[in-house]
Image (cartoon, rainbow, N blue to C red):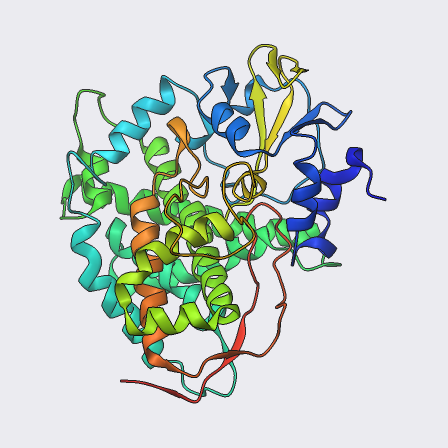
Length: 412
C-alpha cells in the first residue's frame, strides 16, 4: 500500500519516470500534503492555479527557511550567474521581465516570434533532410535536441559560424542536468562549470560587440535599450541570455519529444495531423496538458502562513506544485487521462500561470507546432522501436533521453 508521506519521493524516484501518472492520481487524494520535513505538496488544479497567482508565494530561494522535500537534480539554470528574473519576486522580477519582453514580444516587438516562422521552417526541413538511415532514428539526438538551440542562437543573434560552439555548450550543460547513474559527480560538475564559464565569457564578449555595433537581434536590443526601466547590467544580460539558452531549450526539447511519442501512441491523431497541419495548434495545447515538459515546480517559498484546504502551510516552508497532476485533475478536465486535441477547454498549467508564466511560451508553441506537423507530413509509416523509451533522470524536466523510431521513407 502506498503511504502518502512517501509519495513525493516515489514521484522523484527514477523507477517511476516513464509513468508517474498513477502516483499523481494517488497524490490528488490529499490535495495539500504535508511531507513532514518542511515540504508541502499541492496537486489539484484549482489550488495550484491559486498559488501560482498568490503574492504570498515567493520564487526567491533567499526567503526559504525550510529545505524540505527530496533532493533534486538541477532544474536547468545552475549557471553561476546572479538569479534570472524567474528566480526573483516583484518588483525586481517585473523590471527585468518588462525589459526582456520589450525586445521579445508585444507590445514592443509583436512580430519578432511570428516573423521567425519561415526561418524555423527551414531549420526543421534541414534537420529532417539530414536524418539519413530510417531503420533507426533517435528523434532526440537527430531532431528535437538540435532544433531549439539553433533557434535560440538565431533569436539572440549568435553568428552562424559560432552556432556549433553553442551546440557544444548546450550538450555539456544538458548532460549536467541528466546525470548517468554511477558517474563521478565531481567530474561532471567540473565539466559543466567549465562550459558555463566559456559560455559566459563568449556572451560577455558578444554583448560588448553589440553595444558598439548593434544589429537587428534580441541581444543587441537588450544590450542597448534605454527604456523607462533603465538598462540591464552586463550580469543581468548574461543571466537572461543563459535563461533563454538553457531553460528554454530543455523545455522545448521535451515538448517536441513527448509530443511525437504521444502521437505515435495515438496513430489516429497522427494521421489527422498529417492530413491537416492546422491541427498542430490544438495538438500542442493538449500535449501541454497531457504530457507537460515541466512536471512540477519545486521549492517555492511561503512568505507568510497560508491556509489551504484545512492545512496551514507555515511561513518559510518549501512549496511543491505538481502541475502535471493538476493538468489531469478530473475535477477540472473530463476524461483527463485521454489525449484529446478536440478538447474544447484546455486551460492547462503547462506553461505555468501568473507573473511567472513561461516567458518563451509563444516561441515554444511555434517550434512544437512546426516540428510536429512537419514530422507527421514527411515521415512515412513512423513507428516506435522502444515503448516506453529511456527517460532522462530529471524529474522536473521530464522527457525521453532517447526516442528510437523507424519509418519506411522520408517524403520530400
